[in-house]
Image (tube, rainbow, N blue to C red; front, top):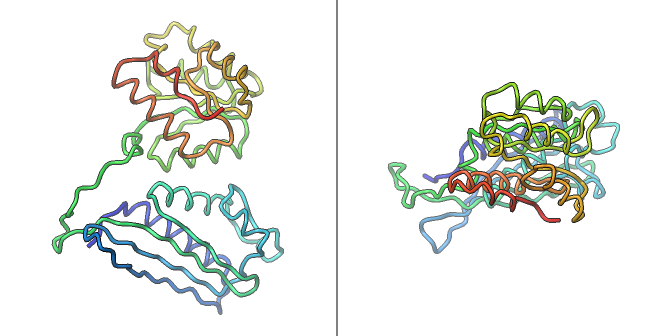
Length: 284
């Protein structure tokens, strides 16, 4: 027996297998194998999950971007294949969250090979863990409710998928006015955090934050509002803080940045030190 995150491992393997199925014809072949590499440490084992197909393969120039959001090969053979273009991005994020590794080999016209490597805790014969699993930071994020405010549909979809990978419940708004209405139409602290884009139509993120802070709602000052913007200059960060935001994440946001921001919010809530939320920021 081994102990790991079954839900995430299943999602990784299903995504890769579905991808292989899409691009392999009816006469093609898909193979799936798992192998264990023995280690001196008896409590853990390294496992490789290998998925190979005889499908259409990928060109070298596409291989460089395979894990980027909405990246799809520009090929007449793939244009009719449905998909969001987020599958491999999700796979990469899930594997990173499990401290694993993924490698891809492909030859155009001949097929592809995906190798996922994970280190998993071993269990006894009864399934009892030899060593208890340590809850990662993402465990604390599960069940949180977040309002994601972003006018760009693609950016909204990417951030939403990343937050859902953390187990977060996501509600969305497309501009600042919708964000104000969403916050003010619910009880105080209905949302655990708000991720707010800055440049939006109808009402920008700065104006929306000022309206939310000035709404008069009970404990509204305790609601973490985190800016998400491509503007990462010092003056932009300062403007975000002056509008009432608690932090600043530079785009493109990553799952690590989102997880770090949520962990920071939870730390401040646990310590009841809301002034410390001013330190919740990504690199600038």
